[in-house]
Amino acid sequence: MQRFSNRVVMVTGAGSGIGRAAAVRIAAEGGSVYCVDISQAGLDETVATITAAGGEATAQCCDVSDETQVKDTVAACVARYGSLYALVNMAGILRFDDTDAIALDAFQRVIAVNLTGTLLLCREVLPHLVETRGSIVNAASTAALAGLPCGAAYSASKGGVLAMTRSIAVEFAKRGVRANCVCPGDINSGMTTGIEWPPNMDFELIARISSLTGPKDAEVMAGVIAMLASEDAVHITGEDIRVDGGTLS
Image (cartoon, rainbow, N blue to C red):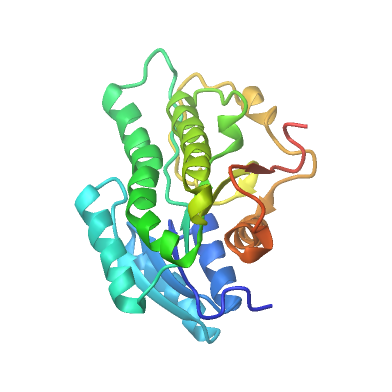
């Protein structure tokens, strides 16, 4: 299956987790993948994996919350490949804080990366996607749909991504651009590795948002993302696709 043959896809958060899995999957389906992440080491590993399998990929280090870096990254992608068909926005950060104790700068950093960063990438790629009648896949979360204990910052950022994506979908539908969200839940993405938990965290509250079928690896998400980014989803826009093993059912 070569759904992305002769097509260029930018994947943010491509240095690890769901972003890496999506980049590898899209490259395996014939896409030229522009891999974006804040971690150069992670990017190098992703690109090496893709090229070793015979795929095409380019690495670009970028802090998605930095407007200038985002502008330069999109310009460099188009200069490198000549066009852009899809944006897969998986860059993000997660933290847990007691809501009555969270520091403002910590809250704002999560918003800056997860929500503002998603906006900046969408804004910069949309003129190019209009030309190719392309697609956006943004990372929301089940945290946008249900309560996440000690996750006020993360939940607010992902709820914002979901609402923003629906607005983009309506605004650009007649210009041929689709925009959708994936809402992962109970996925082994690596986001919680090394995370600092609040001192009084009630882990029974975390357990209540575990899936009915057990956690799954990031490759499960990659298949859904690839479908949404491709023409198989030609009649799907403005949607939030839960991939959570029935957590919120």
